[in-house]
Length: 541
View 1 (cartoon, one colour):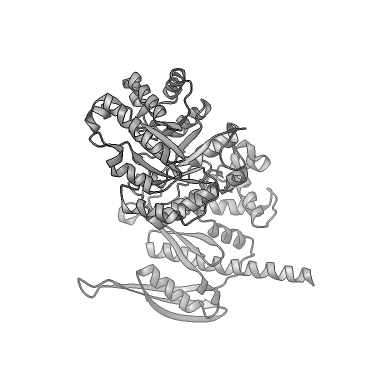
View 2 (spheres, helix red, strand yellow):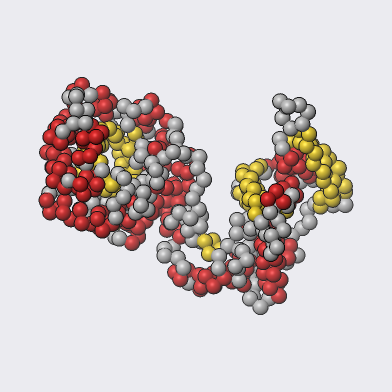
């Protein structure tokens, strides 16, 4: 099997995305996760540029990484300095990493306009910088910045930059599509000409995604002999981002016959992608190929029917190989196959001709026509399924509730109070509580009434709360401030997380529905766990 090395630049290039910021601690945590995944190089940052990167190299030296080599990043020395008196190059040496990557200009426009020097002097900067670093590091890479644009503008000069880098001692020359505007056909033509002009070249690829081609361009380069691919987790990076390693790695390994990370580690890809998104404080992109929540989600009834017979009909790989999983969604597009699949997942083996299936499908389509979204709120669907089957207890009934909002002074925060009347096992509880906002007040009041009966409710907490405004109805009766809203509440306890839904033109009522379902689901889940334990104990006896 052909081998190729993965060079991750999430901590440096990825952090240049406008909505991404990593602390030193964040960088250390991500580096350890990338090492666990099995990447070969982790570019830690530019030690001369900021204290965060400087501190990272000091901190990461305390960790014994298993596979990855930490890389320091910098530039060729300025035209008016020498390598010996350039703080940038000195900081790279002070970082004490085994690997150093420096970039240099290969586009004549940048040499004239950015560096404001001559083409001849730029060649000296490349050679002098690399030659100075060569005896001081174990591995040395040269990023040929803007190489493809430079080649298209002045191919002789761009190639001469590569030759100078080789003379200076670079182990691998990284061809960079820094502006992200090169097409796969151009990548192929340029790389083939470079190989013809420099037969001994050992090269890698670094692409940006400004034309949505970063992954394709990286794969083309790999097919043409690149030994190293640079990119970021989730494609984070400046402007439209960098080449997405979460797509590149499985394409190389599963489709193109390359070995880039240990085979057993491929199943860590999805969890790594989600972990980095969490540390970056960004929502995971659900429709991201391979690792996204929707990557193997099926909604249409015909699709689900086919997938039930053979998952290959609508899945290009087995989801578990990359640590993902198949999901069957429920919506107004759902058919009997969706219902049967979901029911089987929850332990109900039903026949497609069962009247229950038609009844549930009718209810589902009616509710979703009102705005309910069960593809996102699977806990609410599970309750609906079990209620329709008559297999879910009625844990409590909210007989009435009232929420009051008041504001006592211009500078004071509004005060929220909620009063509820709840029936539990024939007993009526009348409670009141305040909270930070009306939904929190209602939640506090319900818990105050219910926890004496169901102490386990104290274990659950809110994870996320989303509100979506939408208009429904053939005559457009709901619009503007009178529109319906859909509330999704994500809750969690010590062992799991679940999402519930509520819909109304009144945001408090929609929240009440989702909150009530969330509390009911927690109690239902607890009952199922007790039943499972009881069955296991009985089997032991």
